[in-house]
Amino acid sequence: MRVIVTRPAAQAAEWVLHLQAAGIDAFALPLIGVAPTADRAAVENAWANLAAQRLVVFVSPNAVEHFFALRPAGAVWPTGVLAGSPGPGTTQALLELGVPAAQTVAPAPDSLQFDSEALWQQLAAQEWQGASVLIVRGDGGRDWLAETLRGRGAQVDHVAAYRREAPVFNTGQQTLLHKAVRQPASHLWYFSSSEAIDHLARLTSAIEPAAWAEARALATHPRIATRARALGIGAVFESRPPLAAVVACIQSIRP
Image 1 (cartoon, one colour):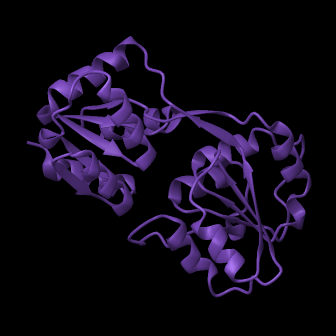
Image 2 (image 1 turned 90 degrees about the vertical axis):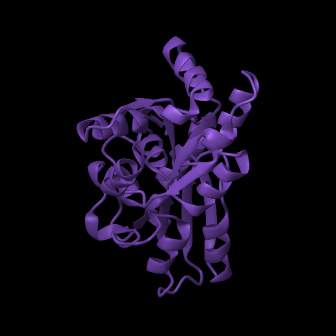
Image 3 (image 1 turned 90 degrees about the horizontal axis):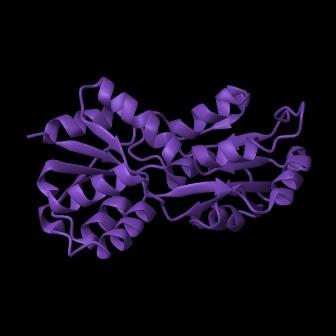
């Protein structure tokens, strides 16, 4: 059984290496393209006003990477500004780029899910009336955390540090896509994003009617699992996002 890793290219390549090291046949098929923002000035302005924020939330490792790619020369993370993260991958990216561990806020390592709701559990006890919050994301996304913070009196702004795009495949990736569609029982789709499933649905509709009832998928969040089932995938397995949990889930379902 080949595991198809659908994360954006940089994360997919890293995950393939980890899965292969665990003895799993894995291949990257990024179903979300990521590109730098078209509005560099907005990110540069966010950096210029970073010290005025009480909290800066990064929605993903991509948000961290692209925001810090436009960091002014010599700039350091301001003292007293919290960096929020929905999960360990984003937290690790922040730490690697110099954000002090004491200034990061993230879900507990044993959280059932890593998402905005789990991050809010770490923030809810604080006073947010009048606080300035910046959310760093791609071009669009869920507004649940922003609305929750606004409901507690915070002033919340967004900045798009990157753009999400439809994937562009090379010849090898096109071949894998066709093979996975035509031989669903010998592949396992690994989804960490509902948007990836939407892109897959569009891509496969141009190939041939996919035998989704015979396909299998692993999803790292209930919302993603629901979207996979809506596509018609016959067997959808749910796993916590950490590598060890994903590996264990894959090993439990391998033929």
